[in-house]
Length: 127
Image (tube, rainbow, N blue to C red):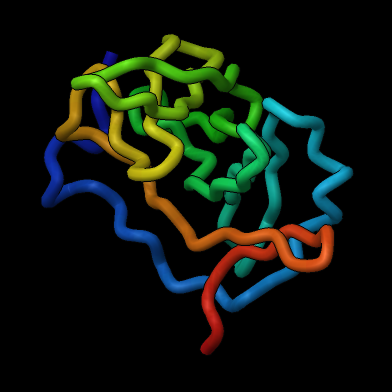
């Protein structure tokens, strides 16, 4: 196995994305994710615990664009409940808020702003 991103300095930064409507919140079943192509980038968008999260879709351990198909859940770390997605390939888990690997915090995926407005899911920032 080759690790593509292995230190914070090498973590992919979240390239700015224009504020973009992705879909209706009702299009994402609670506890699941979808993949959106925004500005040529694959973004994994999750609807978990009544919130939405947007991460890069590329699993840094395999290089495959699969995180949107991962299993979501939560874990208790240091007395804090953290929401996570587990990659469907090698089962590495990523924090939905920080994008950091829960197995190795020096590995991560980009995180993008995401919100729900009027029942619609938006990602990115105002220009």
